[in-house]
Image 1 (tube, rainbow, N blue to C red):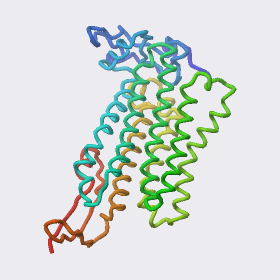
Image 2 (image 1 turned 135 degrees about the vertical axis):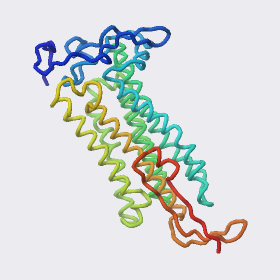
Image 3 (image 1 turned 45 degrees about the vertical axis):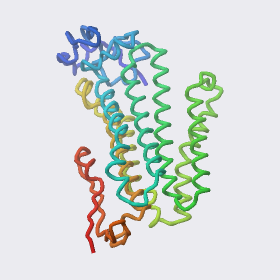
Image 4 (image 1 turned 90 degrees about the vertical axis):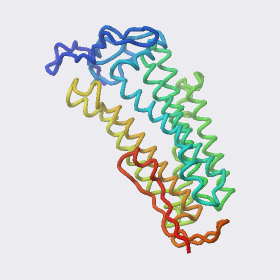
Length: 352
C-alpha cells in the first residue's frame, strides 16, 4: 500500500486547517502547552503513518508521557478514539454496580456466581477499552512506546474475548458443571497463550509466527466450538436464551460492520480532510465495538433472568410475607443507552 507523501498544498482537496486543528494556545497538564500546530501526514515519522487517508490533525512526537496525556485537552485526530473507549471503560467498570443494585436481587434464587461472571465480563470489557484508550493517547510518545502500547491493545482484545466467553459458558452449560470447567479451562488456556505470544519479544519473532497464528485461531474457534456443542446437546429453543444467541448475532453484526468500515478506510478515502478529526473509520469502529459490548451485556441479563426462572409467566414463588404471583417480566430495549440503564428489567408483582 503506497503512502501519500505529497505536501497537502498540492492536493486539489486541500482545505485550510480549522482552529481546532491548529491547537494553538491550548493548555495541557501542569502548564504544558499544545503544539503550535498539528501536523500533516507527510510531516510525521513513518512509524506513525497508519492510515494514509487521514491527512491532518497529527500530534508531533512527544517523547513524554505527560505531553501525550496533555493532548486530552485539545482536539486532534486521536481525540475521539481516546475518549470513546475511555468513556466506555468507565461505563463498564460501573455496570457491575448497576447489575447488583437493579437486577441481581430480582430473582430470590440468584447466586454469587451470577454476580461473579457478570463482573468478569464487565471488567474484561473495561480493561480492553482502557488499554485501547491508552494506546491511542500515548501513540505519539515514541516508536518503542507505541509498539508496547499496541501490544497492550491486543492483550485488551484477548481479555474482552475471554471475559465474554466465561458467562456464556456458565449459562450455556448451567446443568453441565463438567463441561463448564472444560470450556473455561480451554478458553482460559488459549487466551493465556495468546497473551504470552503477544507480549513476549522472543515469541514475537518471525520463526514463531505459525505458533502465534495457531493459538489465535484456536482461541477464536473456541467460542464456536462451545456454542455448537451447546446447540447439539440442548437445541436451539433452549440455548437461544441460555446463551443469548440472538443477542450474540446482533453483537457479531455490530463488530463485523465496524471492522468492515475500518478495513475499507471509509469515509475518509472518499473525502480527503473532511473526516480527519471527526467521523473517520477507526472512530466508527470504536463506536461499533462499544455497541456490541452493550448488546452482549443485555444478552447476559436475559440469560441470567431465564436461568433463574424469572421470565416464566404466572410463576408462583414463596416469599417470607406470603405467596406472590409474578405476572410479567419485561426486558426493555431502548434506543438510548442512558435511558436503558434504569430500565433493563421491570418486575410487576400482583398479590393473590
